[in-house]
Length: 333
Ligand SMILES: NC(=O)c1ccc[n+]([C@@H]2O[C@H](COP(=O)([O-])OP(=O)(O)OC[C@H]3O[C@@H](n4cnc5c(N)ncnc54)[C@H](OP(=O)(O)O)[C@@H]3O)[C@@H](O)[C@H]2O)c1
Image 1 (cartoon, protein in one colour):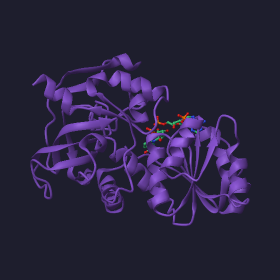
Image 2 (cartoon, rainbow, N blue to C red):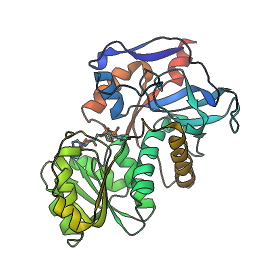
Image 3 (cartoon, rainbow, N blue to C red):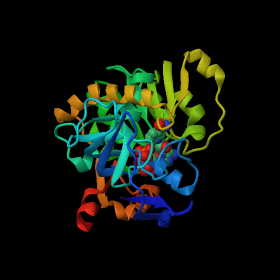
């Protein structure tokens, strides 16, 4: 098969579409012929050499895909060759074939194209596991999403809005804030010229927000705690603003608030399977009812992954940059 390999740690030009050995399907795994995958910020860190794949994971980038089952390993039930599926991967999505534990695979939701579905699983599973399973966001509560126009942000806005929560977002341009509002955000804060703590206080009558989904880490740590309501929960999933921060523990204590930090990729497959099952139960009906979609910024052929990485690194996108694998495979056969 062919896959995007990382020639050596560095810039987008290090992404090379080339012949590699086919993956071997182990017991409990499903082999998928990939239709589409998508760029996640983690892929960029991996390309630069700052994110080593967990032990046993493929060395090719790609944390999600859509496609068709071509083979099932021993002991797999529930999937047969020919099934159209989506999968949460630990790596290897920028490829023609990928092997993945069956628990991380789900049927392609009705109403979603295989191309758009290439950008579904990493964001939906991250948002569902953090905002709903861990932080327990409820209808009637308020969620603050930093980076509202990101792949993660566009997913969090729609899910929280559809499930009855109020949503506040931060983003860096007026156009991105408009896109967030179109998806259901109630309040937009331009992080370049507004203080989100002040805006949160203003729009919540000084109460603060119940849950924060944070991509910034250290630089927002203390301000995030200030923005939390009593019993609020801060969930950190990204460290774009650094790894070491200070927080006023007195504020945390008075609010009886909680801080968690999680990563999806390194979790054991059994945990990922539980998250995939929960996300499927909650989100597939919303997709089928037309209440949730993958926000696709653009689609590029997988052999132009370097260009796709440049777009995401320059934050030139809203939602997901999808990589089309099916067309590239078709055009060479
Ligand atoms: N822990 C996990 O399991 C997990 C899983 C998936 C993703 N993540 C993390 O989630 C984040 C989003 O991932 P993605 O792939 O969706 O990334 P993405 O589309 O590249 O988005 C990055 C976002 O960061 C925003 N941003 C930059 N500076 C900001 C600031 N000062 N304040 C608020 N937002 C700011 C950008 O907003 P503008 O474009 O408006 O500047 C952009 O929306 C990343 O940090 C990623 O590492 C974590």
